[in-house]
Image 1 (cartoon, rainbow, N blue to C red):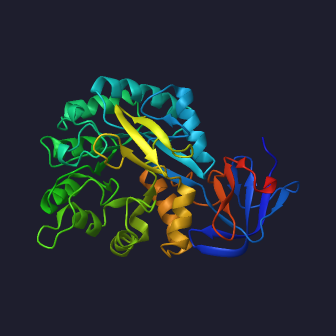
Image 2 (tube, helix red, strand yellow):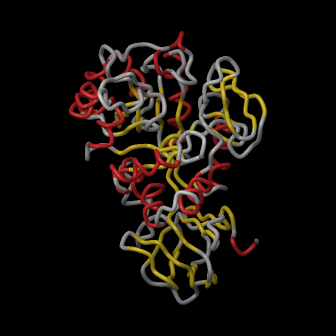
Image 3 (spheres, rainbow, N blue to C red):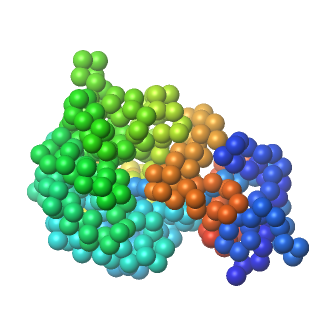
Length: 381
């Protein structure tokens, strides 16, 4: 076990606010309220210490996909995102054949059981062909509750979230089924009306999958799903803050109407995150990444992102002008709460896992700790 540490002198962001010249005590794998006599002091003056990032929607990174490849490939992607501050990640699978997805869920479930990932998110195949984005239209299907149950069962208790076009036949019954089994029902890749979206929320849907993207735009006579998802206090809205998926004004609109307590920053990352430009596969779809933007080779639709959450954090503060405390809520506390893990991760409170990120004065990442061990050591430069 690593020696106990006192991280001293930094600006520490707590649920109650920011503490200047604060300290975080790490004892073993947990955050403690008192330091043992032999604790090592780490001077972090001039830096920020924030909770480790929690990503509830992520398809891969480091050249590895969560939808395909071996368990070792998945771990490679997980490690890539840890290097960028994401200490808790849900592995997202894109649309595929139902039997393939069930088998894939078994592989991912073993990694969740080991604690390497925080669960599984199924994005598809129960989505609208009208808003398919980077999903193979030939593999899309209506959300049959029996098939939804098949994927839940295949995940062996580790299904965390499923994205649905809830206006499709079977959509509302599937939302109810997911809710009964403790799985988050997310509205996304949808062509729903405002009224249909309200029905989905009443049935139990609590997340908007990458709000604004892959859904009808907001209209003054047809407010659509965006308005319904923003105005309902029961819903948390995902945002991809990479400067490509959203105009800064759209981000500000979401924060203004939902409030910082109902926003979750996600990456929606694919293989190229932390890896580089080139050609990749997103499920069965070929993707070209150029200048960090991923698009389908055929059709040109945006195909996930190459975002890492440290970049999303810095952009939110330095470009969007959001308070650091609001960004911490969106990137750590809120997604941890959604996953039911707020008693373990998402804040720097005693008893929580020692998962944290150290940022310099310009909000560039210089340190990452997961469960008391440095993944990126700020003392090594």
